[in-house]
Amino acid sequence: MTGRIRNRELAAKVMDADAAASLISSGDNVGMSGFTGAGYPKEVPGALAKRVAMAEERGDPMKVGLWTGASTAPELDGALAEVEGIEMRLPYQSDPVTRAKINDGRMDYTDIHLSHVAQRVWQGVFGELDVAVVEVSGVTEEGRLIPSSSVGNNKTWLEQADRVILEVNAWQSEHLEGMHDVYYGTALPPRRMPVPITRPEDRIGVPYLECPAEKIIAVVPTEAPDRNSAFSPVDGTSQRIAGHVLDFFDSEVRAGRLPGELLPLQSGVGNVANAVLAGLRDGPFDGMTAYTEVIQDGMLDLIESGKLRMASATAFSLSSAAVDRFNRNAADFRDRIILRPQEISNHPEVVRRLGCLAMNGIVEADLYGNINSTHLMGSRIQNGIGGSGDFARNAHVSIFVTPSVAKGGAISTIVPMVSHVDHTEHDVDVIVTEQGLADLRGLSPRRRAELVIDRCAHPDFRPMLRDYLERATESAYGKHTPHLLGEALSWHQRFVESGTMRP
Ligand code: 0RQ
Image (cartoon, rainbow, N blue to C red; front, side, top):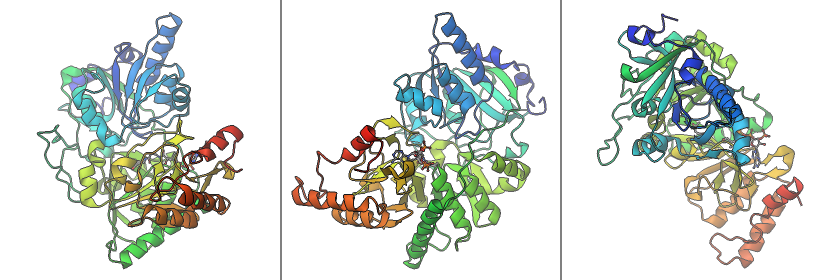
């Protein structure tokens, strides 16, 4: 381990996780590293959860505010949610225990565009950041921090926190050194300057995180692995969705709206998005690039196949099999992957300039193209908006993908009106299900509705949607975006009452 902590001053601050966790107080806001199961602290959160449980037993409850890059893993979110040690969680989660606590009303959660988090913290809108707990893969002789498998908000946590606890993880590949690009040029308005990225491969910062040694109060060694959940095997539904997306890219190239190597890809979280990447591996496009948020299995496959020239992101989101592959070949991947802070990987200015092709999964879409990415039946949070909004609004083409039905066919993912809106009709260019693809660009709401029903809805639900649209067009208050207000959310209500949207 001493090999990973090459700085003497920091080596003298090594302690175990329990001792480090004792330096966190009830009521503290704690900024932890971690983004989709990569680069989160492995030791201190569990030790903190133990403290919380002991405090509860003493009748002196302890809670902290928990801020991260995005989702983490059971050892962090799960452990702290289990003992109800989290007062306010932000900006994204996907942990089953956390989700249950939030939906039971026992934990506060604020769901934020991931590119917004750093600037909100700089503005102080969430209060002071007391402690940062950040995993790094090593410390250089000079005390510079070598980031680990995600960058997320770590730069901001290290700058803003009063006290810093480092976890140095020797499980992370040593070849990560040099892969990161940490940009120190951001400022709040009116001093904000352009972010000088004009190609996904541009490096504009430094490969290290900086932190004054006097702020670092503890260094905890670990060798625990990242824990990302495995993707489901690509099934027929995902394959058909991928096929429609590929055909669309092909026709855009033929129409002269996309170059032959496409534009930088952004692919969201989830199984369907991963399957689209798998489809691209067998497609006709070469020399592709990615400017995205996470590098998932499908992205790694594309790099290995030579189809993807390089990928820029803020984190890995790899299954354990893919992590092994990455760790074995990390030196080769280093030249073709750049990890950046999330306010840069998701920066609206850069996404617009590069012309990203955004592909994100959804919960449901409505006839007019509004998208719900986060809430089941309008009230139960699934994960969060993540970076989907950073990309969707600013993309060259914004594509949303979903199977046409959920829960074994009880739910239509195409509904008369979405029960929660994350992406408005203005940010949605293309909707794809296994049934087909609806290119909504340039269409009026009523034309969009016809196309979404014909191309995307499941055949079992198509007649009900057509019937709704016809009656709404006849009797709605306005004929521009016709709705029957008393009926628009009745499908959801039926599901809540009977367990199915079917009549
Ligand atoms: O629940 O596992 O209990 O059955 O939602 O659905 O079909 O596995 O889909 O893994 O692609 O995730 C929107 C959640 C889709 C994801 C979402 C139920 C379904 C299942 C998951 P079960 P699937 P995916 C940032 C990218 C927002 C953040 C984002 C997401 C579970 O894509 O979190 O885009 N997106 N980040 O049964 C009720 C419906 C449902 C439904 C699905 N209509 N009603 N339940 N489910 N549809 C940018 C990056 O670059 C990363």
